[in-house]
Structures are given as C-alpha cells and as structure tokens.
Length: 249
Image 1 (cartoon, rainbow, N blue to C red):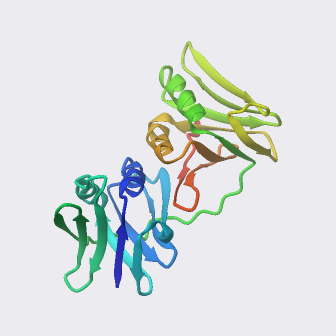
Image 2: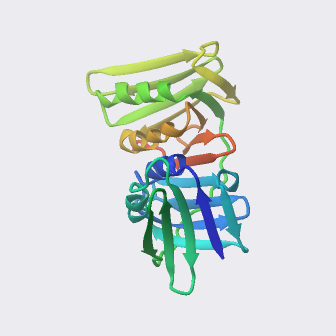
Image 3: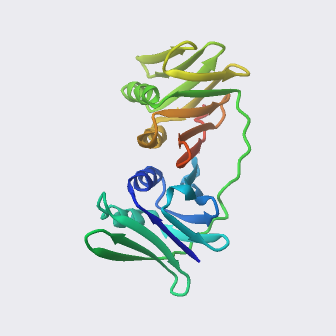
C-alpha cells in the first residue's frame, strides 16, 4: 500500500523536527506527489502545512492515497537513531495497524510505531488575501525576533510602499528593524496597501526554526490579520504556517 526509501534522512528529519516544535501528532497523507501533513497546533493559534515531495525519495511505492496517523515525537526519536549513511525505509502495514521504519547501513535495524486515533475534524481550511507579500532572508527575521525578545513578548510586522519593518515596544523601550526596497536582504516586496499586524513571539521563535531548511522566507501580511510564513527548499520540501494575530482589546 505504501513503501518509500530515503537514501539521506537529514532533510526529512530536520524539516519534521521543525514541525514538532508546535505539534506532537498528526495524520500524514501519502499521495502520488509526496507526503503531506496539515494540522493546527493544540491552541488553534497556528496552522501548519508540511509537504515533502516524492521525487526526494530513492523509491516511492504507493497505491491510491494513504493516511498515516502518527505520534510525531515518537517517529522523530526513531529517525534520530539513523546514521548519516543509512538508508531509511518507511512502510505501512495496514493489517497490523503499524508503521515500520527500517535503517540499513552496516547493519539493519527495524522499528515499529503504532498508528494512533486522531480527530482531524478541527483542522481549518483558510483562504486568505494579503495586502503585502514579502520575500526576505531568514536571518533578518531571526534578528528582528531576537531584538524584540529583549523587550517584550510580541512583535509587529509592517510594510509600506518602499520598506518592510519589524518592531516591538515595551513599557520603556522599543526596537525597530527597517529594510528599504533596495536592500540586498529584501528579495521581493509587493504592496497593495500599507499593512501592520502584531504577533506572539513565543510562536514565532518556534516557527523561525524552520529556517534550517532554507535561507529565505516568504511572508503574507495584512492589517490585524493572520500571518502566512513559508519556508521552501525548491522541489524538495515546504513548510507553511498561518499564525493568528495578537489583537489588542
């Protein structure tokens, strides 16, 4: 029904560890074009969409569409046992309701995970329109988050005609990171209208760890509106997040 082999587990393991910063379980969907996972974190503040393309697998055998509900923390604990030169094979055993992981190198090691029961009914589907779209080097977002974290627990992202701004303000202090349109760190800036939204730093500090898979990030921003943040390694893997804004009372 489903069997797939990776000759190098590093990218899959790294990407999945980023997802695990916010969720501990989910229903993976194996389809013709690859493996995906779409799930909201337990607080319903963040929606995560993970995609790993079939072309990255050395072998990818699948009949139809298969859903694989797993504890992600347990899956990662097994994947961390893989050496850099191990081939890793995933296999769904529908009869025993198990997910098998085989590590092949100088020896062959087998692990088995049970499939779990997950209610996916609360995973929302969102169709969002953003007033601004920004492609930026991930290191800039990391700097902005680090600066803001010294001062407060929220961060403000805003964009105008010719600049992108990351700012934060506490009771007595404030910080501001400004990138003009001609900055080398600002890859693309498409503005339909000036935008400004505030977000939780706790969530963004976890989300930005996905910069391990890419040097740049794409943002969709509105006014007091959810943030879309996309990390993409072209033709390999993509992790998208929708983060709810922090709206003042």
